[in-house]
Image 1 (cartoon, one colour):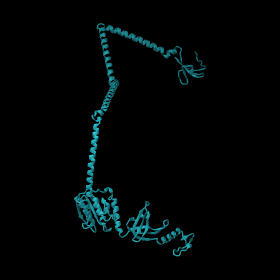
Image 2 (cartoon, helix red, strand yellow; image 1 turned 90 degrees about the vertical axis):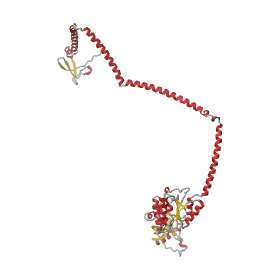
Image 3 (cartoon, rainbow, N blue to C red; image 1 turned 90 degrees about the horizontal axis):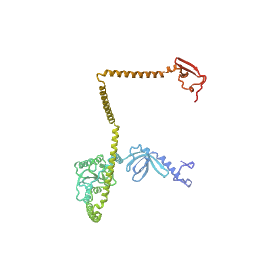
Image 4 (tube, rainbow, N blue to C red; image 1 turned 30 degrees about the vertical axis):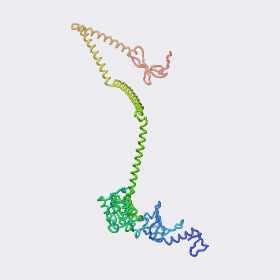
Length: 486
């Protein structure tokens, strides 16, 4: 070991003042000596002081009858462990010794862990417990409430043990008129678990009890093993009758205790949980009766006084004293509301009438009816006029004068038509452009776009134009433009 820059071997038996060490040096020397000599250990003991950290590491101690040693199972090794440590387990661990310098303590770093001896039963116990817990058999929501006043109590235990005597003594003391049915079973040894499960099923099948107590006295883990069997746990879980489990002493915990609706520390406690103490219940009921009677008398007396005081008030002699104003307000509100409704209805009626008239005026049917009336009126007027003309013509056109009349009318019409034709022909001749051109006029056209020149401003000097005469066209060049001024 290197200490203070030089190598020296420590001798604890022959140390001198020149070999005075610091705490660190001593601890490091112990650490080197122990860890190098105990690199592979196999230790057997019982798990105690178990602590699981949030980091996933397990810290615990291994003990036997005379000593104990600290141990740690780190998270990395715990992942590969077949069974994690639990309080009370008998285990065999493999690992190496380690000195934790900050506290000056030594511990075993656990690499492997397995159960040993009695630990096999514990292993089986924990495996079944974990299985049933995952199945929800321990869920508080599945627990049934114990009846307050059971008429019949069923007991499943050995008929020769102290358990039944303890239960009977407690029941006689607390509730003398109890009714108990004992289903005797084996509570230890081969076939005990099957007997207990069958007894629970029989009680449920026949409906013999309102509450069941199952239990036995204390003993070792092997003695209590019948209550750790899965068949017993299944019978308890499917039981429709509430079950109180009282197996062993208060420190003993079985699978039956976990599945039962209530766990009692002892059989006597189970009997106390099953029934209420009779004289306490009777005293309670008597006191409750007295309190109820007293309270009822006081309440009646108080209500009578209040009623008498109310009856003496003038306001309560007749209801109209209090309700007159309210009645009047209701009547006024009723009249106001009716008036408002009538006014609103009239206004709405007028609006609807106006809209109907407007709608009728805009309706195609209304317009069509109006046009039909006008058409009928025109027809009647035309008919009257035609009838009148026909009558007049009939009077004028008598058979003997018909030819003369027709000739006269025909000549008159021909004369009128000739005059109109002559007038129209003269007018056409007067507006014919060629006739105008014959009178010495001409029409100028621009060469660039062949448009009619309407003003001197539309041409410039040097620009070419055409003059259209009645008998041909002349092409000219503008020498000078002289606009005429007013």
